[in-house]
Length: 230
Ligand SMILES: C[S@@+](CC[C@H](N)C(=O)[O-])C[C@H]1O[C@@H](n2cnc3c(N)ncnc32)[C@H](O)[C@@H]1O
Image 1: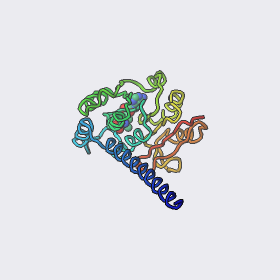
Image 2: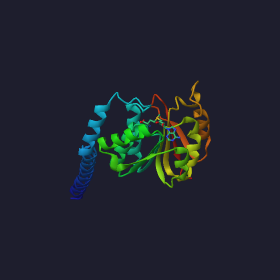
Image 3: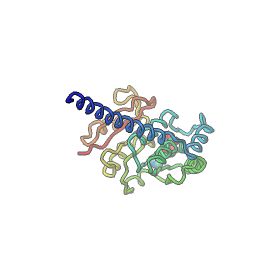
Image 4: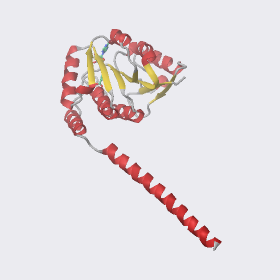
């Protein structure tokens, strides 16, 4: 009799466990389905990017770096983004596309009026203009005057000023936030780096409040400096 009761207990336990496993799997597959669901905006951005593939000639990031920025924003759920150096808007489009999924917004700064105007037109055509505040002006002045806070910064303007940009942004960067810098080559071990990059990297790698790494997937070189929680 006791053996029978134990068998029934084991059977009940097994079914409870099975129910847990199945409901967990169902939730996971539902949330995956949601994440992969393609929206009308996704289709519009993709169409825009496809139509412009191989036409980004204004010092724009390569598509592979655009994808890295997109993945970074999504992975960390960043929402308050700043870009220094818009050019005609290639990187901004990848960042803003990711922000359309996290519920975020992007401020981007460009000093050249022609490139700024082209970027604004591109943002409209891609359907992302409602998420982007494009500023025309000198980032040397605009960045220190911004109030923030930011949780993601993409620095891609004048390399000699990278360290100054980082210093100006750091107090406005949230803990866990990321300062991503473009064109850092293979980091401090590179034999040749654009003027200003080595000084920037020395500062970023030695700053006690930052955890700096090199993004392994980028050929141009992207450094990622995450603000420590302290
Ligand atoms: C490498 S491009 C940016 C490319 C852009 N991130 C993209 O992928 O489409 C650098 C841009 O920074 C701009 N720039 C340089 N110095 C600047 C400054 N002081 N303030 C604002 N923009 C600046 C340049 O005019 C140029 O368009």
